[in-house]
Amino acid sequence: MSNDKSIIAITWDGKSHPYQYVHFDVIEKFDWLLYDYSGNAESTNKIFPTPKYFISIKSECKGDVINNIFNYLLENKIKNFPYIGLIDDDIFLTTSDLNKLLFIAEIEKLDVFQASLSHDSYFHHRQFVNKAGYNIQKTDWVEIMAPFYSNEVFFESGKYFNKSISGTGIDVYLIPVIQKIINKTNTAVIHSVIMKHCRPIRTDFRIFSNGKDNLQEIEELRLFCIELIKSFNNVKSDPIIKNLLNRKYIHSIPLKYKIQRISPMLKNIYKMLVDASYR
Image 1 (cartoon, rainbow, N blue to C red):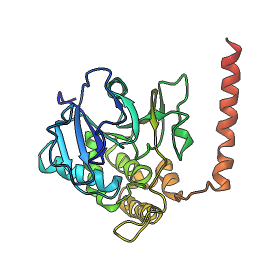
Image 2 (image 1 turned 120 degrees about the vertical axis):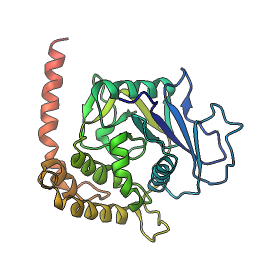
Image 3 (image 1 turned 90 degrees about the horizontal axis):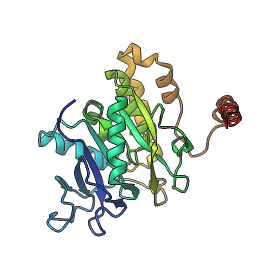
């Protein structure tokens, strides 16, 4: 692995404290990239700690942000970092949390990962909520609010980041497909690190400059990914990818998916009872 440091990119509204939800308890072992999505901030002279990289572009949402970060890194030939984290500005973490995430990712040789969510977070997907007693837990995908991507996954996926302004759909469809294509599929939630999502989710029902809402963007990205994998037999026949791409992203959970949860739920109950019997 390269000796260059990983990058943590954090978004900023250009007005409030740029690291509003970050607690600096130890010296960070990574480089900060500060992204001003208002496009109004001119410099980082009065910001501490001073980020190594700074981008100020008026942006609509997370897909817009990560596409601009991708282009910035390409244009400036910044290519040798092991991982990049793409953190929303309403995520509470500490610098020791971030150091630990990157440390565990290197030990486990993860390609994609995220910290688990605290139980008092705003969230859509319960599978990412913290599970006590686990260090990591394998998963098929991680959310767009605070994902970490290996260098290879980020640059290969970045070719298609411009297909979503909202960013939703990049996480559940595009990234897993690219991972399978390039054989970088080691994905996990790191439960030994907990983050809190501090504000309500604001993407739903917004209409973006392309005239679409996030559900329309997600569906178009799903269909694009189905086309993308047609020439890759090992990808289009993969049961995990087929399951992800066959599942449409909607607000409510269809009954058939609720029924599928019964079997793992019973296994988890059994495991809890067995564990309890040894205490």
